[in-house]
Image: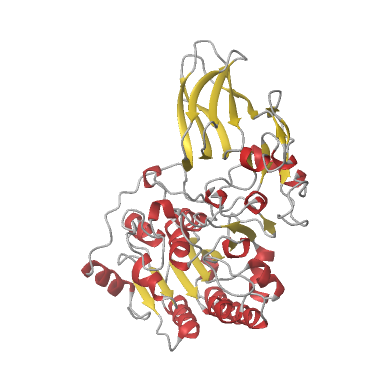
Length: 503
Protein backbone atom coordinates (compact mmCIF):
# COMPACT_ATOMS: atom_id res chain seq x y z
CA UNK A 1 0.00 0.00 0.00
CA UNK A 2 1.05 3.58 -0.57
CA UNK A 3 2.18 5.40 2.52
CA UNK A 4 -0.16 8.21 1.56
CA UNK A 5 -3.38 6.19 2.05
CA UNK A 6 -5.83 7.46 4.65
CA UNK A 7 -6.53 5.43 7.76
CA UNK A 8 -10.03 4.61 6.45
CA UNK A 9 -8.57 3.33 3.17
CA UNK A 10 -6.00 1.28 5.04
CA UNK A 11 -8.68 -0.38 7.16
CA UNK A 12 -10.84 -1.10 4.15
CA UNK A 13 -7.92 -2.60 2.25
CA UNK A 14 -6.93 -4.76 5.21
CA UNK A 15 -10.50 -5.99 5.59
CA UNK A 16 -10.67 -6.89 1.90
CA UNK A 17 -7.45 -8.84 2.28
CA UNK A 18 -8.91 -11.05 4.96
CA UNK A 19 -10.05 -8.98 7.92
CA UNK A 20 -8.27 -7.47 10.85
CA UNK A 21 -7.73 -10.70 12.72
CA UNK A 22 -9.61 -12.80 15.21
CA UNK A 23 -7.00 -13.55 17.82
CA UNK A 24 -8.47 -13.64 21.30
CA UNK A 25 -6.81 -11.13 23.59
CA UNK A 26 -7.33 -11.33 27.33
CA UNK A 27 -5.79 -9.69 30.33
CA UNK A 28 -2.57 -11.27 31.57
CA UNK A 29 0.20 -10.54 33.99
CA UNK A 30 1.84 -8.10 31.59
CA UNK A 31 -0.44 -5.09 31.78
CA UNK A 32 0.01 -1.97 29.64
CA UNK A 33 2.91 0.21 30.71
CA UNK A 34 2.24 3.34 32.77
CA UNK A 35 2.58 6.63 30.91
CA UNK A 36 1.69 10.27 31.22
CA UNK A 37 -2.04 10.90 31.03
CA UNK A 38 -3.49 11.63 27.58
CA UNK A 39 -0.28 10.86 25.71
CA UNK A 40 -0.81 8.47 22.82
CA UNK A 41 1.53 5.45 22.84
CA UNK A 42 3.44 4.79 19.63
CA UNK A 43 6.27 2.42 18.71
CA UNK A 44 9.14 2.62 16.23
CA UNK A 45 11.31 -0.48 15.84
CA UNK A 46 14.39 -0.20 13.62
CA UNK A 47 16.23 -3.35 12.57
CA UNK A 48 19.89 -3.00 11.57
CA UNK A 49 20.63 -6.25 9.79
CA UNK A 50 23.93 -7.83 10.80
CA UNK A 51 25.02 -4.96 13.09
CA UNK A 52 27.44 -5.49 15.97
CA UNK A 53 27.04 -3.32 19.05
CA UNK A 54 30.79 -2.96 19.59
CA UNK A 55 31.31 -1.80 16.01
CA UNK A 56 28.49 0.74 16.45
CA UNK A 57 30.50 2.11 19.36
CA UNK A 58 33.71 2.00 17.28
CA UNK A 59 31.98 3.95 14.52
CA UNK A 60 31.06 6.75 16.96
CA UNK A 61 27.65 6.81 15.32
CA UNK A 62 26.06 10.00 16.72
CA UNK A 63 22.36 9.07 16.49
CA UNK A 64 22.73 5.64 18.05
CA UNK A 65 25.14 6.99 20.65
CA UNK A 66 22.55 9.61 21.58
CA UNK A 67 19.89 6.91 21.92
CA UNK A 68 22.17 4.91 24.22
CA UNK A 69 22.85 7.98 26.34
CA UNK A 70 19.14 8.78 26.62
CA UNK A 71 17.97 5.21 27.09
CA UNK A 72 18.85 1.54 27.48
CA UNK A 73 21.73 -0.44 25.98
CA UNK A 74 21.36 -4.21 26.29
CA UNK A 75 23.88 -6.59 24.69
CA UNK A 76 22.40 -10.03 24.14
CA UNK A 77 23.04 -13.38 22.46
CA UNK A 78 21.31 -15.73 20.07
CA UNK A 79 21.09 -19.50 19.74
CA UNK A 80 23.06 -21.63 17.26
CA UNK A 81 22.55 -24.90 15.44
CA UNK A 82 21.03 -27.44 15.91
CA UNK A 83 18.19 -25.13 17.00
CA UNK A 84 18.70 -22.65 14.16
CA UNK A 85 21.58 -20.92 12.36
CA UNK A 86 22.42 -17.30 13.11
CA UNK A 87 20.75 -16.07 9.93
CA UNK A 88 18.10 -13.48 9.12
CA UNK A 89 15.02 -15.68 8.83
CA UNK A 90 15.24 -17.10 12.36
CA UNK A 91 16.62 -13.83 13.76
CA UNK A 92 13.93 -11.46 12.55
CA UNK A 93 11.20 -14.01 13.31
CA UNK A 94 12.43 -14.15 16.91
CA UNK A 95 12.51 -10.36 17.23
CA UNK A 96 9.08 -9.81 15.71
CA UNK A 97 7.06 -12.71 17.14
CA UNK A 98 8.39 -12.69 20.71
CA UNK A 99 9.25 -16.40 20.70
CA UNK A 100 12.38 -18.45 20.04
CA UNK A 101 12.85 -20.68 16.95
CA UNK A 102 11.69 -23.82 18.76
CA UNK A 103 8.22 -22.23 18.68
CA UNK A 104 8.03 -20.13 15.50
CA UNK A 105 9.88 -22.90 13.59
CA UNK A 106 11.72 -20.54 11.24
CA UNK A 107 15.05 -22.33 10.96
CA UNK A 108 16.30 -21.03 7.61
CA UNK A 109 15.82 -18.20 5.14
CA UNK A 110 13.33 -20.26 3.13
CA UNK A 111 10.76 -20.28 5.96
CA UNK A 112 9.86 -23.90 5.24
CA UNK A 113 7.60 -25.41 7.88
CA UNK A 114 7.20 -22.19 9.84
CA UNK A 115 4.57 -21.71 12.57
CA UNK A 116 4.00 -17.97 12.09
CA UNK A 117 0.23 -18.43 12.02
CA UNK A 118 0.38 -19.78 15.57
CA UNK A 119 3.02 -17.25 16.66
CA UNK A 120 2.33 -14.12 14.59
CA UNK A 121 4.25 -10.86 14.56
CA UNK A 122 3.52 -8.25 17.23
CA UNK A 123 1.66 -5.93 14.84
CA UNK A 124 -0.76 -8.71 13.95
CA UNK A 125 -1.45 -9.28 17.64
CA UNK A 126 -1.85 -5.53 18.17
CA UNK A 127 -4.33 -5.26 15.30
CA UNK A 128 -6.39 -8.12 16.75
CA UNK A 129 -6.56 -6.39 20.13
CA UNK A 130 -7.03 -2.85 18.79
CA UNK A 131 -8.18 -2.82 15.14
CA UNK A 132 -8.06 0.98 15.05
CA UNK A 133 -4.26 0.96 15.34
CA UNK A 134 -2.34 2.09 12.27
CA UNK A 135 0.50 -0.40 11.63
CA UNK A 136 3.25 -0.18 9.03
CA UNK A 137 6.28 -2.32 8.14
CA UNK A 138 8.89 -1.60 5.48
CA UNK A 139 12.01 -3.62 4.75
CA UNK A 140 14.94 -3.80 2.38
CA UNK A 141 15.00 -7.60 2.84
CA UNK A 142 11.68 -8.66 1.32
CA UNK A 143 10.95 -11.86 3.33
CA UNK A 144 10.34 -9.76 6.45
CA UNK A 145 7.38 -7.92 4.99
CA UNK A 146 6.35 -10.70 2.59
CA UNK A 147 6.35 -13.54 5.13
CA UNK A 148 7.03 -12.66 8.78
CA UNK A 149 4.52 -9.81 8.98
CA UNK A 150 1.03 -11.07 8.16
CA UNK A 151 -1.58 -9.50 5.88
CA UNK A 152 -3.36 -8.22 9.01
CA UNK A 153 -0.74 -5.43 9.19
CA UNK A 154 -2.20 -2.32 7.56
CA UNK A 155 0.70 -1.82 5.17
CA UNK A 156 3.69 -4.04 4.34
CA UNK A 157 6.23 -2.66 1.89
CA UNK A 158 9.25 -4.45 0.43
CA UNK A 159 11.55 -1.83 -1.04
CA UNK A 160 12.73 -2.48 -4.62
CA UNK A 161 16.37 -3.53 -4.68
CA UNK A 162 17.31 -0.53 -6.82
CA UNK A 163 16.26 1.79 -3.97
CA UNK A 164 17.59 -0.39 -1.12
CA UNK A 165 17.96 1.32 2.28
CA UNK A 166 17.57 4.81 0.82
CA UNK A 167 14.11 3.93 -0.43
CA UNK A 168 13.23 2.10 2.76
CA UNK A 169 14.15 5.14 4.84
CA UNK A 170 12.29 7.57 2.57
CA UNK A 171 9.12 5.48 2.70
CA UNK A 172 9.25 5.20 6.48
CA UNK A 173 9.93 8.92 6.92
CA UNK A 174 6.98 9.79 4.70
CA UNK A 175 4.73 7.38 6.57
CA UNK A 176 5.67 8.88 9.94
CA UNK A 177 5.33 12.49 8.74
CA UNK A 178 2.29 12.27 6.48
CA UNK A 179 0.04 9.79 8.31
CA UNK A 180 -0.67 8.91 11.92
CA UNK A 181 1.02 5.53 12.52
CA UNK A 182 0.88 3.79 15.89
CA UNK A 183 3.49 1.12 15.18
CA UNK A 184 6.27 1.27 12.60
CA UNK A 185 8.94 -1.29 11.77
CA UNK A 186 11.88 -0.43 9.50
CA UNK A 187 14.61 -2.85 8.42
CA UNK A 188 17.88 -1.54 6.94
CA UNK A 189 20.09 -4.09 5.19
CA UNK A 190 23.33 -2.47 4.11
CA UNK A 191 25.36 -3.18 7.25
CA UNK A 192 24.84 -6.88 6.62
CA UNK A 193 25.78 -6.40 2.98
CA UNK A 194 29.03 -4.68 3.99
CA UNK A 195 29.75 -7.48 6.46
CA UNK A 196 29.40 -10.12 3.77
CA UNK A 197 31.44 -8.15 1.24
CA UNK A 198 34.20 -6.79 3.47
CA UNK A 199 33.94 -8.29 6.96
CA UNK A 200 32.98 -6.75 10.29
CA UNK A 201 36.58 -5.64 10.92
CA UNK A 202 36.64 -3.49 7.78
CA UNK A 203 36.33 0.24 7.34
CA UNK A 204 33.51 -0.43 4.86
CA UNK A 205 31.50 -2.03 7.69
CA UNK A 206 32.03 1.06 9.85
CA UNK A 207 31.00 3.27 6.93
CA UNK A 208 27.80 1.25 6.52
CA UNK A 209 27.04 1.72 10.21
CA UNK A 210 27.52 5.48 9.87
CA UNK A 211 25.18 5.57 6.85
CA UNK A 212 22.55 3.58 8.74
CA UNK A 213 23.02 5.86 11.73
CA UNK A 214 22.19 8.86 9.59
CA UNK A 215 19.10 7.05 8.29
CA UNK A 216 17.99 6.31 11.84
CA UNK A 217 18.49 10.02 12.48
CA UNK A 218 16.08 10.81 9.63
CA UNK A 219 13.49 8.50 11.19
CA UNK A 220 13.85 10.14 14.60
CA UNK A 221 13.59 13.61 13.09
CA UNK A 222 10.37 12.54 11.37
CA UNK A 223 9.05 11.42 14.76
CA UNK A 224 10.02 14.52 16.72
CA UNK A 225 8.84 16.92 14.00
CA UNK A 226 5.29 15.55 14.02
CA UNK A 227 2.72 18.23 14.83
CA UNK A 228 1.29 16.11 17.64
CA UNK A 229 4.59 14.88 19.02
CA UNK A 230 4.16 16.60 22.40
CA UNK A 231 1.03 14.54 23.00
CA UNK A 232 2.65 11.29 21.90
CA UNK A 233 4.61 8.69 23.88
CA UNK A 234 7.11 7.07 21.50
CA UNK A 235 9.02 3.93 22.40
CA UNK A 236 12.04 3.70 20.09
CA UNK A 237 13.81 0.33 19.81
CA UNK A 238 16.84 -0.48 17.64
CA UNK A 239 18.03 -4.07 17.29
CA UNK A 240 19.75 -6.60 15.03
CA UNK A 241 19.01 -10.12 13.83
CA UNK A 242 22.56 -11.52 14.18
CA UNK A 243 26.19 -10.45 14.15
CA UNK A 244 29.14 -10.97 11.78
CA UNK A 245 32.62 -12.39 11.87
CA UNK A 246 35.63 -10.15 11.35
CA UNK A 247 36.23 -11.82 8.02
CA UNK A 248 32.57 -11.58 7.06
CA UNK A 249 29.69 -13.98 7.33
CA UNK A 250 27.30 -15.45 9.86
CA UNK A 251 25.22 -18.54 10.49
CA UNK A 252 27.64 -20.27 12.85
CA UNK A 253 28.10 -20.48 16.60
CA UNK A 254 30.92 -18.01 17.22
CA UNK A 255 30.37 -15.26 19.74
CA UNK A 256 30.52 -12.63 16.99
CA UNK A 257 27.82 -14.35 14.94
CA UNK A 258 25.58 -14.88 17.98
CA UNK A 259 25.82 -11.27 19.16
CA UNK A 260 22.85 -8.98 19.05
CA UNK A 261 21.54 -6.07 21.12
CA UNK A 262 18.69 -3.76 21.98
CA UNK A 263 18.94 0.02 22.20
CA UNK A 264 15.72 1.56 23.55
CA UNK A 265 14.45 5.01 24.49
CA UNK A 266 11.05 5.92 25.90
CA UNK A 267 8.86 5.99 28.96
CA UNK A 268 9.75 3.31 31.48
CA UNK A 269 13.34 3.14 30.19
CA UNK A 270 16.13 4.49 32.41
CA UNK A 271 18.48 6.92 30.67
CA UNK A 272 22.05 5.68 30.34
CA UNK A 273 21.20 2.22 31.66
CA UNK A 274 22.95 -1.00 30.65
CA UNK A 275 21.19 -4.31 31.21
CA UNK A 276 22.15 -7.94 30.65
CA UNK A 277 18.75 -9.57 31.23
CA UNK A 278 17.23 -8.59 27.87
CA UNK A 279 16.67 -11.23 25.16
CA UNK A 280 15.48 -10.68 21.60
CA UNK A 281 11.87 -11.90 22.08
CA UNK A 282 11.51 -8.93 24.46
CA UNK A 283 11.21 -6.50 21.54
CA UNK A 284 7.78 -7.76 20.46
CA UNK A 285 6.43 -7.98 24.00
CA UNK A 286 7.74 -4.52 24.91
CA UNK A 287 6.01 -3.07 21.85
CA UNK A 288 2.71 -4.76 22.74
CA UNK A 289 2.82 -3.60 26.35
CA UNK A 290 3.66 -0.05 25.32
CA UNK A 291 0.72 -0.01 22.89
CA UNK A 292 -1.60 -1.04 25.72
CA UNK A 293 -2.10 -4.63 24.58
CA UNK A 294 -2.37 -7.03 27.52
CA UNK A 295 -0.28 -10.13 26.87
CA UNK A 296 -2.28 -13.35 27.21
CA UNK A 297 -0.27 -16.16 28.86
CA UNK A 298 -2.01 -18.54 26.45
CA UNK A 299 0.03 -17.02 23.62
CA UNK A 300 3.13 -18.70 25.04
CA UNK A 301 5.43 -15.74 24.38
CA UNK A 302 9.05 -16.00 25.53
CA UNK A 303 9.68 -12.27 25.76
CA UNK A 304 8.98 -9.93 28.62
CA UNK A 305 8.59 -6.17 28.63
CA UNK A 306 11.76 -4.17 29.14
CA UNK A 307 9.61 -1.61 30.98
CA UNK A 308 8.86 -4.25 33.64
CA UNK A 309 12.16 -5.83 34.80
CA UNK A 310 11.92 -9.07 36.77
CA UNK A 311 14.54 -9.17 39.56
CA UNK A 312 16.46 -12.42 39.88
CA UNK A 313 18.73 -13.50 42.75
CA UNK A 314 21.46 -14.86 40.49
CA UNK A 315 21.70 -11.58 38.56
CA UNK A 316 22.93 -9.83 41.71
CA UNK A 317 26.20 -11.73 41.26
CA UNK A 318 27.26 -10.02 38.00
CA UNK A 319 29.59 -7.58 39.72
CA UNK A 320 31.25 -10.45 41.61
CA UNK A 321 32.04 -12.59 38.55
CA UNK A 322 35.69 -13.54 38.03
CA UNK A 323 37.94 -14.12 35.02
CA UNK A 324 38.94 -17.63 33.88
CA UNK A 325 40.98 -19.81 36.22
CA UNK A 326 41.64 -23.06 34.31
CA UNK A 327 39.67 -22.40 31.13
CA UNK A 328 42.04 -21.23 28.40
CA UNK A 329 39.71 -20.57 25.47
CA UNK A 330 37.35 -18.01 26.95
CA UNK A 331 39.68 -15.02 26.85
CA UNK A 332 41.51 -13.23 29.63
CA UNK A 333 39.32 -10.15 29.39
CA UNK A 334 36.06 -12.02 29.92
CA UNK A 335 34.68 -12.31 33.44
CA UNK A 336 31.91 -14.76 34.07
CA UNK A 337 31.98 -17.22 36.97
CA UNK A 338 31.76 -17.47 40.74
CA UNK A 339 31.07 -20.24 43.21
CA UNK A 340 29.76 -17.81 45.81
CA UNK A 341 25.94 -17.98 45.82
CA UNK A 342 23.70 -14.94 46.23
CA UNK A 343 22.32 -13.98 49.62
CA UNK A 344 20.02 -16.64 51.02
CA UNK A 345 21.31 -19.38 48.70
CA UNK A 346 23.83 -22.15 49.44
CA UNK A 347 25.77 -24.84 47.60
CA UNK A 348 26.40 -28.20 49.30
CA UNK A 349 29.59 -29.77 47.93
CA UNK A 350 30.09 -32.21 50.82
CA UNK A 351 29.80 -35.16 48.40
CA UNK A 352 31.59 -33.45 45.51
CA UNK A 353 34.59 -35.13 43.91
CA UNK A 354 38.02 -33.48 43.90
CA UNK A 355 40.17 -31.88 41.22
CA UNK A 356 38.77 -31.02 37.84
CA UNK A 357 38.38 -27.64 36.17
CA UNK A 358 38.08 -24.94 38.82
CA UNK A 359 35.31 -22.99 37.14
CA UNK A 360 32.91 -25.96 37.17
CA UNK A 361 33.70 -27.66 40.47
CA UNK A 362 30.15 -27.97 41.85
CA UNK A 363 27.35 -25.59 41.00
CA UNK A 364 28.70 -22.40 39.40
CA UNK A 365 27.11 -19.06 38.58
CA UNK A 366 27.97 -17.88 35.11
CA UNK A 367 26.88 -16.06 31.92
CA UNK A 368 26.19 -17.07 28.34
CA UNK A 369 29.39 -15.49 27.06
CA UNK A 370 31.57 -17.26 29.62
CA UNK A 371 29.87 -20.66 29.61
CA UNK A 372 29.50 -21.05 25.84
CA UNK A 373 33.10 -19.83 25.47
CA UNK A 374 34.27 -22.80 27.52
CA UNK A 375 33.34 -25.12 24.65
CA UNK A 376 31.43 -24.28 21.48
CA UNK A 377 29.07 -26.54 19.55
CA UNK A 378 28.07 -28.80 22.42
CA UNK A 379 24.60 -27.20 22.59
CA UNK A 380 25.37 -24.77 25.39
CA UNK A 381 24.21 -22.12 22.91
CA UNK A 382 20.69 -23.57 23.21
CA UNK A 383 20.27 -22.24 26.75
CA UNK A 384 17.93 -19.61 25.34
CA UNK A 385 15.52 -19.01 28.21
CA UNK A 386 18.02 -18.28 30.98
CA UNK A 387 18.89 -14.61 31.42
CA UNK A 388 21.92 -12.69 32.65
CA UNK A 389 23.61 -14.79 35.39
CA UNK A 390 22.39 -18.37 35.85
CA UNK A 391 23.44 -21.49 37.76
CA UNK A 392 25.22 -24.37 35.99
CA UNK A 393 26.29 -27.84 37.03
CA UNK A 394 28.61 -29.00 34.23
CA UNK A 395 30.17 -32.41 34.75
CA UNK A 396 31.48 -32.43 31.20
CA UNK A 397 33.66 -29.34 31.56
CA UNK A 398 34.63 -30.19 35.16
CA UNK A 399 36.10 -33.50 33.93
CA UNK A 400 38.42 -31.84 31.42
CA UNK A 401 41.13 -32.01 34.11
CA UNK A 402 41.92 -35.03 36.28
CA UNK A 403 39.24 -35.67 38.91
CA UNK A 404 38.67 -37.95 41.85
CA UNK A 405 35.22 -39.26 42.70
CA UNK A 406 32.08 -38.05 40.97
CA UNK A 407 30.23 -34.81 40.45
CA UNK A 408 27.68 -34.49 43.26
CA UNK A 409 26.60 -30.95 44.11
CA UNK A 410 23.35 -29.48 45.47
CA UNK A 411 22.09 -25.94 44.95
CA UNK A 412 19.86 -24.84 47.85
CA UNK A 413 17.36 -22.00 47.67
CA UNK A 414 16.23 -19.61 50.39
CA UNK A 415 13.11 -20.53 52.37
CA UNK A 416 10.03 -19.20 50.58
CA UNK A 417 6.83 -18.29 52.44
CA UNK A 418 3.92 -20.69 51.82
CA UNK A 419 0.52 -21.38 53.38
CA UNK A 420 -0.01 -24.64 55.17
CA UNK A 421 -2.62 -26.89 53.59
CA UNK A 422 -2.74 -24.84 50.38
CA UNK A 423 -1.23 -25.37 46.96
CA UNK A 424 1.87 -23.54 45.76
CA UNK A 425 3.73 -23.41 42.45
CA UNK A 426 7.47 -23.86 42.00
CA UNK A 427 8.70 -22.26 38.78
CA UNK A 428 12.19 -22.13 37.33
CA UNK A 429 13.94 -21.99 34.00
CA UNK A 430 15.89 -25.13 33.17
CA UNK A 431 17.99 -26.70 30.43
CA UNK A 432 19.32 -30.21 30.85
CA UNK A 433 21.49 -32.31 28.53
CA UNK A 434 21.76 -35.94 29.61
CA UNK A 435 24.21 -38.82 29.45
CA UNK A 436 23.93 -41.75 31.86
CA UNK A 437 24.65 -42.17 34.75
CA UNK A 438 23.99 -38.44 35.14
CA UNK A 439 20.86 -37.34 37.02
CA UNK A 440 19.16 -34.12 38.09
CA UNK A 441 16.84 -34.08 41.07
CA UNK A 442 14.52 -31.37 42.41
CA UNK A 443 13.62 -31.76 46.07
CA UNK A 444 11.45 -29.61 48.34
CA UNK A 445 11.45 -29.45 52.13
CA UNK A 446 9.00 -27.69 54.44
CA UNK A 447 9.99 -25.86 57.61
CA UNK A 448 13.46 -27.43 57.48
CA UNK A 449 12.13 -31.00 57.28
CA UNK A 450 13.33 -33.92 55.15
CA UNK A 451 13.52 -32.98 51.44
CA UNK A 452 11.06 -34.84 49.20
CA UNK A 453 11.70 -35.56 45.51
CA UNK A 454 9.33 -33.65 43.18
CA UNK A 455 11.08 -33.92 39.79
CA UNK A 456 13.84 -36.05 38.22
CA UNK A 457 15.77 -35.37 35.01
CA UNK A 458 17.19 -38.41 33.22
CA UNK A 459 16.61 -37.40 29.59
CA UNK A 460 17.45 -34.38 27.45
CA UNK A 461 15.21 -31.43 28.35
CA UNK A 462 15.23 -28.41 26.07
CA UNK A 463 15.34 -24.90 27.51
CA UNK A 464 11.98 -24.25 29.16
CA UNK A 465 10.20 -22.81 32.17
CA UNK A 466 8.99 -25.52 34.52
CA UNK A 467 5.91 -25.06 36.72
CA UNK A 468 5.52 -27.72 39.41
CA UNK A 469 2.45 -27.82 41.65
CA UNK A 470 3.23 -28.35 45.30
CA UNK A 471 0.79 -29.42 48.00
CA UNK A 472 1.95 -27.70 51.16
CA UNK A 473 1.51 -29.80 54.34
CA UNK A 474 -0.87 -28.47 56.96
CA UNK A 475 0.81 -26.03 59.28
CA UNK A 476 3.89 -25.49 57.09
CA UNK A 477 5.09 -21.90 56.73
CA UNK A 478 8.18 -22.15 54.48
CA UNK A 479 9.43 -24.24 51.55
CA UNK A 480 13.02 -24.70 50.39
CA UNK A 481 14.20 -26.14 47.06
CA UNK A 482 17.25 -28.30 46.35
CA UNK A 483 18.67 -28.95 42.89
CA UNK A 484 21.00 -31.96 43.11
CA UNK A 485 23.14 -32.91 40.10
CA UNK A 486 25.09 -36.17 40.08
CA UNK A 487 27.28 -37.60 37.34
CA UNK A 488 30.80 -37.56 35.98
CA UNK A 489 32.17 -36.86 32.52
CA UNK A 490 28.62 -36.42 31.21
CA UNK A 491 26.74 -33.22 30.31
CA UNK A 492 25.15 -30.34 32.22
CA UNK A 493 22.16 -28.74 33.95
CA UNK A 494 21.13 -25.07 33.98
CA UNK A 495 18.81 -23.44 36.55
CA UNK A 496 17.55 -19.85 36.61
CA UNK A 497 14.62 -17.72 37.76
CA UNK A 498 13.60 -19.85 40.74
CA UNK A 499 10.54 -18.85 42.76
CA UNK A 500 7.69 -20.37 44.76
CA UNK A 501 4.32 -18.68 44.52
CA UNK A 502 1.68 -19.39 47.14
CA UNK A 503 -1.84 -19.94 45.81
